[in-house]
Image 1: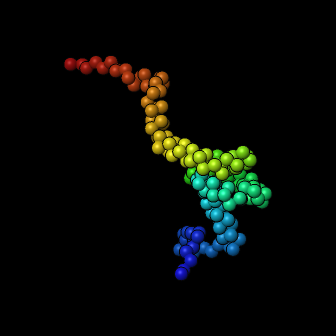
Image 2: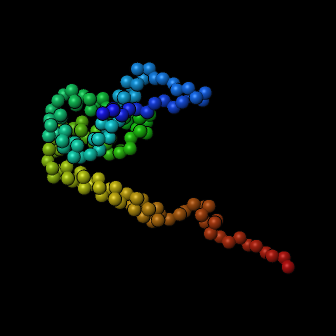
Image 3: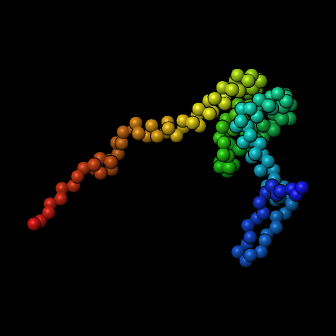
Length: 153
C-alpha cells in the first residue's frame, strides 16, 4: 500500500521549476501539522475522556507537553485553529480538578451538550442580538429623512 504524503509539496516557482524543501523544513512542517491536529483534537470531550481513561493525565511528561502547546494562543498560530474550544480545554487541562472530572461520563456528556447547543444556536443568538439593538447612528437618522425636492414646472 502506498503511503500518502502528509504535507503538500511547495508550489511551483514562476519559471515553472519545482522547489525542494530541506529535510529540516519538512520535519518542521510535519511537527507543525501534527501539533495542530493534536491541539484541535482537544476540542472533543470524548477524546479528553479517553485520555483520562488511558491515564495520560497522570504522566508529568504529558502535562509538560500540554503546557508547551500553550503557544497556540499566540496570534501567529491561533489563526490556524478551526475549533477554538480546544484552546479553552487546553487551558482547563492545566487544572487538576478539570482533569479529574473528565473521568465522569456525566460531566463529559454535559460538555458535549453545551458545545452542541452552542453550535446549534450561535448564529440565531447573533442575529437576534443585532435585530434587538436600535440603530442610533447619525447616518441612519439622515437616511430616514426625505429630502425636500422642488420640481420647477
